[in-house]
Structures are given as C-alpha cells and as structure tokens.
Length: 457
Image (cartoon, rainbow, N blue to C red; front, side, top):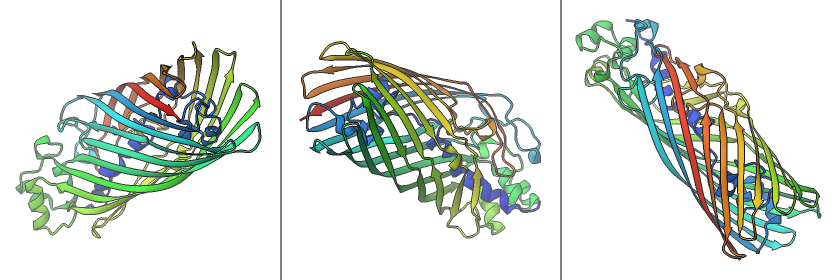
C-alpha cells in the first residue's frame, strides 16, 4: 500500500490539538467566587459588593466598603456528569465504513476543586491596588479504553491558573478606572488511542501488515496510544471602568485582552508490538517519542454590567459578556521529530454571548440573599467541530446564594448554580485523512458550589 506521510502527521497532531475545546467553551465553567456565583455573575462588573471585583472589574476596587484592606478566600466545587450515546460512529471509508468497535455508551463523572484568592487595598480614597489568583479555564475527563470515541479522546486534563495584579484610580465622584496584568500558567495532559492497523496500512507495505497479524483495523486489543503532556505561560492585560450616573446606580465596563499561548512538552507514543516491529523493519521514523510545541490564540472578552438599587433592600443586577472566539480558528502543532511535519487542526469557532440577570436582597445588616439566571452561548459552530474533550452546548444557569456578616470585618458567603445544558450532537471526522467518524449525543449535567470567606481590616 502507498505510504501516506500526511496521515501520520495529522493523526499525531490530532491527539493534542483536539483538546482545544476543553480550554474554550467546552467544559470551562466560571468559578470566580461565591457571591458572583449566587447571582450567575450578573452585575459582577458593577456591583462593587465583593473583593472578587479584582477579576470582574478592577475599577470597582475604589468602592469596596468597610476597611482599608480586604482579603477573599474561596473554594469552588464543580461536579459534572457527561453521558455519551453512540448513534452510528463509523471507520473511514478507506477502511470499509463499518461501525467503530467498542462501548457505545460512556459516562464521565468529574469533581473538581478550584481555589480563588483575592486581595485589595486602598492607598488613599482615590487609589487602590489588588491581586487575584483564579482558574479561568479547566476541564478533565477520562473515557474508557474501549469506547467508540477512543481514537478522538481518552483522557483529558487541562488547567489554567491566572495571576492578576491590578490597580484602580478614582477620576472624579462619578468615574473610576482600573487595569491589571494577567499571567496565565497552563498545564495539559491529553491521551488518545491509535488504530494500529490503520497506521500500518497508511505507512508500511500491506504484506508486512498482514504478515505481522495487524490486518484488521478498529481492533481494541491491538490499539496503541498517544499521550501529550505540555505546559506554558502567557501574559495578557485587563482594563475596566465604573461609572455612577446617580446614587445607587453603577455601570461597569471591562475588557480582558486575548492570550497567545505556546505550550511545550513531550509526545509519548505506545505502539502495538507488531506495529513497532513493522515500523522498525521499514525504517519508518514516525510515532517515536518526541518533544512538541502547540500554539493557539485564546479570545478577548468584553463585559457590560449594571447594578441598580431599587430600594434600600433590593439591588438589581445585569450583565452581557461577549467573547471573541472567532480568533480561535486553528491550532498548530510543531513536533521536534524532523520526519514528522507540523500539523494544523481547524476549529472555526464563533463569537459567543452570556447574558445574565439577578438580584441581591439585603434582609438585614447580617444576612444577604441572592439569586440569578444566565444564558451562556456555546462557540462551537456545528456538530462536525465538537470534540469529546469539550462536549458542552448552550447552558442555562439557575443560581442562588447567601451571605452572613459576623461583624463589620468578617463575612461568609455561599453560592450554588445548577446548569442545564442543551443536548450536544457530535459528527466529527477530524482533519486527519483516515480518521473515523464519532457520531452520537452528549448529555451534560453540572452543579457548582462555592464557599468564600472575606476579611476586612
């Protein structure tokens, strides 16, 4: 059979590059603190009720009450269940178009802990600075070795830590401005199965594949695997302003610039013994362990928020968050192995919007109750661009929370959100020649909880 070098380079790249949706819309769920979670993050850039405004809108640090310095410590729990039902996944027509072998249903249960730390300090009435540590992106999943989508994804673990020093300045009685620098540290581990016979037919003489006993494609017992572990650091910035047109009404505007990430790491391949011998006999230098670098552009965001005191007891909140996902058009993977060409995978994501509304009810001096709702749009344009590494769809947030002030300095906050997610269809063949088609439905349920302690001094 004719050698197809393009086949191997694309398949090897795909094991890493299909992880991209995990960073993006996918399963990346906002967890920036308990107060915001209780409102579905409505009005987060305008309410100035919480030290987490270091992330949401640094300009609002000027308006933090009760103390020259504020510290916020939050722990967030994300519990998700992702169920997949196969609806006719097939091997590539070059290998017969038959059904993909393996388990046709799969369930992923994942519980993740996400910490937040925020600090803000007034230098004087017109100047403040702050610092935030949060996790804006992250997901994990681990499918069984025998499921029908194993050639698209097995294990995924992606996390990003954001370090964000900020400053705020009061321009006049109605306007404050702020900004900061974000350093994002990303770690990723990604694993996929390799179809031994498909690779053999694509690279080696047919007779050698047959003699080695790996003539049947799509065979679980003959699968190999590819694992990528990589990390990198990106730097970006954020800007914000807070305008108070009248007492009790705040309007916030926040811009967070996109990030160019370059992750460096290792690609480790475990090949079927017979396939490894065929490659050695034919001096095929591909699918050997190698270093790799992947580059991608992550999007900018623009948030418009409003907070209005309807009366001394009730504060109404609203936000619209726009995310520039159209910059996330492709990922490029550059392998250190000179025999293995670079690989490019196209995503063609679309810009997305999250709209949220909520309220705070100040029951008394010690207790605040809150609730919120949000519609969170998914950037994946169609089922052919959806990945099992990030299989979510449009989301609907139903949130509630409460705060208790022990005194003027110490307070405890709780937030909970239940997310209903539209059923997600996938019909993904991938960009690699010879790739199988994963066709089916994902059902995702997600619950988030956050507990936060604020100390003012």
